[in-house]
Length: 424
Image (cartoon, rainbow, N blue to C red; front, side, top):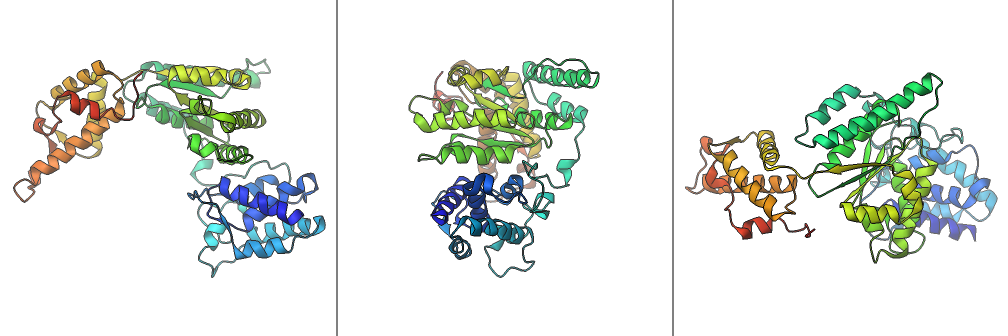
């Protein structure tokens, strides 16, 4: 029966978006999905998807709300399903201003900061709208490319990475100029593979690339959506593709960053990982003009990931390797954490840090900037313990890390800060 199919699809999309309850917005999505080409053309797919935002944080099977049950009860035939599409779209586009249901804001029946905007303002836009229109906030104002590049240049170290990003940007800018001049372009993918150890700035650079793409008009918005395997793979058949589609919908107009992407193709990943990869390849092609995908992980594993699907090999043509930080650069990273916290480094601290980082580099697999952050947090805790040792904290004791606050230089201390980073 059509009602049961709509219910199943509504539950599936609610779970894919990690929403705790099945609400009217999920029923609307289920109706459009089940009706397919027979769905009313007055309600665009982009508008329907816009009602599903923002993503929730629930990992439980969603329960069907009373409002959704009432809407489902009215669906008995294809004609009633079509009528329900128009009715629900109208109700979701024009919610009551003072809802009595405390869950109404989360269900899409009340305007919220995440769901207001031009996409929600109209539920009867043209079917050519394949994605929700971004709200006219700061996202719509393009950042200066030079300002973003200055931010890239200000990052500590990463000299080859900065050069690779500039080269990538230059290719796309040259193509834009050739296009305006009526000259043929050399095909250049928006997608990038990052390789390197943890803590080398991959996520930070991914955000910058997304903003650079937005600043020169390669994508419409320039935001970054960060996900991992858990956000893409479901635990039962048929739901993985929905989760991937939901994630890509959020990333449209910007970049999707998949950390440890190799886990999708790792031994034991099974059919769910393969399903996620296949769906991702399809959506990369469907949205090739307004979506960049950046995947990251260890070099060897990422090679196997790219080789796991021919579609990945043809779409990922740009590779950027992130080198480990040097000891001197890690001292600068530590100093950056201290500056942000408005903490001074006492005499001899920088020299002592250099010794600790040289030792960690010799051991290997220490986490790079993450290790520097760990050292700063431990040093800060030691400073607090020292300051409180006499039962009171003096003003002079709250903003300076001294050599005695740094961790001891012994193999056990070095090793415990490498937990979580497996040997290479």
